[in-house]
Length: 214
Image (cartoon, rainbow, N blue to C red; front, top):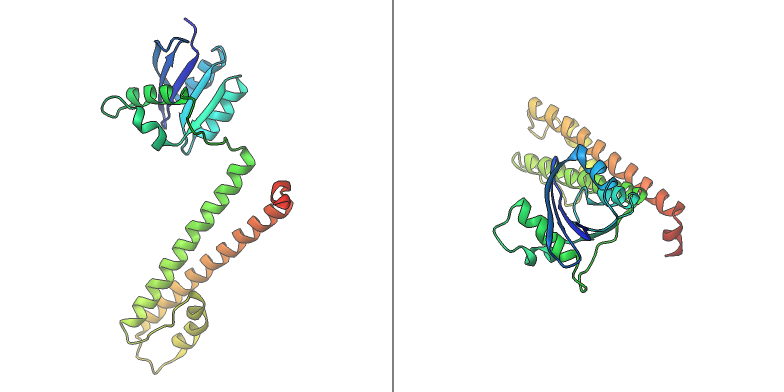
């Protein structure tokens, strides 16, 4: 039994494996737990391994490459047409196995550790930006309920909030003033987090050879 191609349905704990020989005949159907993956592929003769590109796929691609396997990642949308039955782990692994062997398949480049790290920073920044926008909208909405309309833009909140909190004639109750002060502090903290991550991204690009060439 010579396995030439393997499709893996990735998961958090239980992985489904589907392998075929050079004739395309199924010679392996197996479930592996996370702690069994490395040992299994380390003891397997080098072959073509396919996986859908997802959160953990780049980690496993790097790991299996170390064992001598040729790993290819594919977008899930390109694998979906190869699912022959109702969607389940075994069918997904078989579909991945078939899709990775197609000559016209489009593959996703495997990211190295540094690339994944800076992408994590980008995602974290995006999350902070989203949270900052939501916080600004909440502050603006609360103020509008008491007849105070804020101009568009996050910066306008930072400029006007001190005056609003100190204005004893605007009719805001003490409870709301304390809440707005808390929310404004949170907004400033989110803004600080965004700025720090943007600086980190700029410094990374400044030190990255590929970015400098671009």
